[in-house]
Length: 81
Image (cartoon, rainbow, N blue to C red; front, side):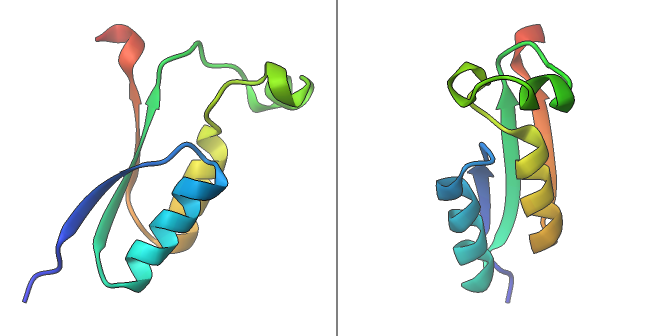
């Protein structure tokens, strides 16, 4: 029996991270994706900014969550589309 596949948008925030963990726990084949719709900035630059000045999505955190859950994760650069 094949597991149902879910494509999950991952921002690196709590909501999408918990959703990924719950779906994995429930047996879904989860694939994470982060849409990059802003200019990429180095993590050290982002860390030096105030929270409200940072981009909406934390690619590094989303990637870490995906690795921890052992699910594939892709970053799609939508600026080039």
